[in-house]
Image (cartoon, rainbow, N blue to C red; front, side, top):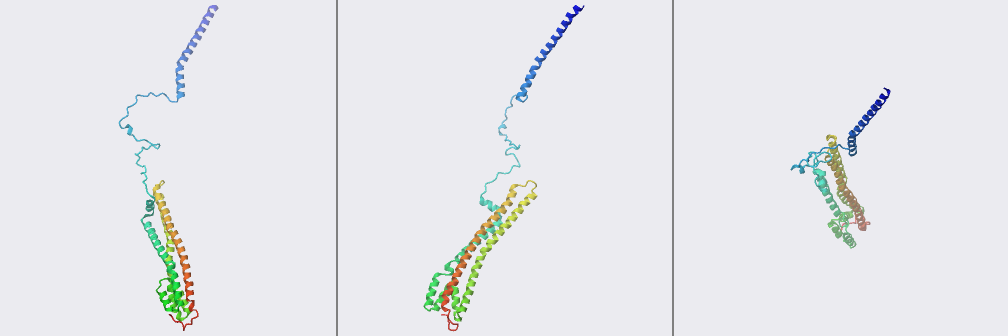
Length: 299
């Protein structure tokens, strides 16, 4: 019995081993395609997609608008800003200044040019101290033609002529009285010239103040836009107020700088010519320095 049981046990053991090996072989053959498919998916990254046949493009497919990165279709965004129009610098200046400031600065500019021309004509040597009058007046005094010298000075419209005529009119009362009369006329003419020049200085001082006023107004307008426009005000509305502030300052300085420069130049020129008038008039009237009040006579 023991001998029959040993071959049976050995056969049973071999049969069991064969079944296990067959199972392993069948399992390996079953799982190998699945592993290969997983490896392919891991290599290429995406699951294979079963793509159907492509649909034919409709007639309006080529006309679809392009979509930008923000998701807005080109040309169909209702909130898109309108394209900027071409605007020249002169138009920009006019729009920024406005009608009020434009009229004010234009009036100041025209007045400044007019005053400059008037003062240039008044500050000439021929108007204040003409050389021809000095020569002819001295010749008539040398010829003892006092009346002719007085008529010559009286007919001349220059400052020197008016000063000499006033001195000759008072020379009969003494040389000192003649000098006083000459000084009075000289101061009067000097005041007229300075009074006319002072308007140029007034424009030079007033123009920057108007520009500063426009600067404050423009900045207030910009801050009002920020206060009322919420968290995101329009840059164009802010730029309008800032442009007004800057251009009013710029135009105000552009008017003031030439005005102040012209005023100082003309004032120095007038002061120098008036000094020459005083020196020439005293030299010409020095002939009557020793004349007594009673014996002196005009002409």
